[in-house]
Image (cartoon, rainbow, N blue to C red):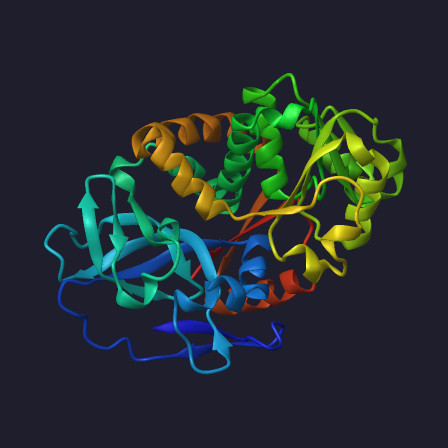
Length: 356
């Protein structure tokens, strides 16, 4: 089998390594990885890998890490009676050619990897969907699901949280990094489920046309036009991680900013500022897995899955064609594209799928 090992101290240093897969353990199943996407989300997993435990899902030698991906795989060997060779699944995969899992809590719709080393992490990442009974699976849109799916779900959960809180009394949603896939997911869900909330997207000057063309925002502003934000009661969701931009938003909106949400890489202190010196509310980090668990407890897994699937289909109508899907063969291509992604030089209109 092959794996891509990334230097945890210098993410642009990565190499493809060959390993002996070894015998399959009792009760385990071996998955051959068919495809996965490489997005900015994967870079976030690597950047905060130690702090959030993302390096722990797929162990690597000391100082190295295997970046988690979302994608499709096929059972090629099974010591688990309920999983047959040839069955296809969707879930959290390593940047590699194969993965051994220990299926538990098996149902027609999926299973959980009960491998001991994965149990301390959020259970959301340990669940695998069996495609034969998966309401979100569309054979014609597998590429879109890998590219947008995990990020879309974060957007779905943010909207659910905000709506559950009555949008904190605000009628305006300000989203940074509006061209990012998570931001587009949030905008789509808000457009359909909270149509009375006005959506304003902030993006770089070079991405304004792309964001406007998506049709997901009522207003699109470049980062140098934050001073044009309407001073109405607002919530902000920051995907950009730029401390100066966040400060500008807080200073522009002041007391009209009712909630400030941080999504992605780091806590506010790591963004080069202390939370206490910003006007308005203290920025609060949004950790999607915790909110997913809360949603499942509140409405039940079946209803949660139904709502997500419905919103996912709406998102595909809204923005599923906003990226051109590029398919690349081999893990060396995955390595090269990940390094390019770390450098921040990937066009948002490109959707990268790797077929190991």
